[in-house]
Image 1 (tube, rainbow, N blue to C red):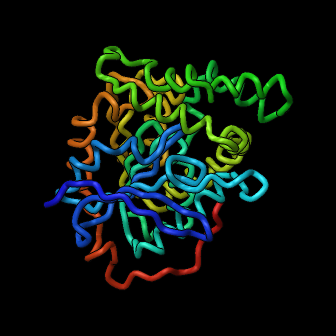
Image 2: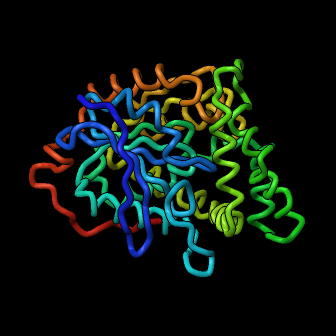
Length: 309
């Protein structure tokens, strides 16, 4: 099987969506959704390790990576909107059934996609991607809540720190016992992307919209209870953004959820990719994907969608 990653762009509702893809077009699909402030590059090593058995596809969200960066006047930067773009992306690629791998921002985007069409999602891997208030560590989230409640210049200043090169570097390095394992290109590239014209405004809009994710947590949790979707929470246990209680919380609605904690931080793939790849491969092998060639499923259609929070 060819593990090489290929790079493509597709137009979704008039916007360019860049994505990375590897593996056979006839293999079961694993859709990978990245977090802030990163891009599909986060999955570069994981994709090569899984491409032997899966068709792995990782898009850049609008406003991130190599995808379009429309102005805040021309695009509604909300998580619901990003989920709609992602759903349309899967339709354009003919992905009617797939497993999901979500990280950070990718989680609320993925939860919306899964809750709207539970019949399309066969299994979920959440890597430091919350669906519960558990694990939202106060020291990190206090300025976010303050900005959401009152987005004035003072509260915005604290959030702009997260968009600075130092703030981006912290996201990669905190909680990592051995920083020599980290490739500094990761945070340098992310920080450079945040310096593009219009990027800061787009990211601040998304931060303000994070309140919509918190409000939708009960909807996402209901989806877990009703679907009984197989779920693996593989987590950097030293994450100071989404603590390990966020991983354990999945068992509240999915008692059979598998939780694996690794001795690293928020970007666990940067230090523990081999371990995560083995866990994901084993999990997906046991739970399967229920897919036929090219991501289709026997009798799979597109029934009326549920409410997308």
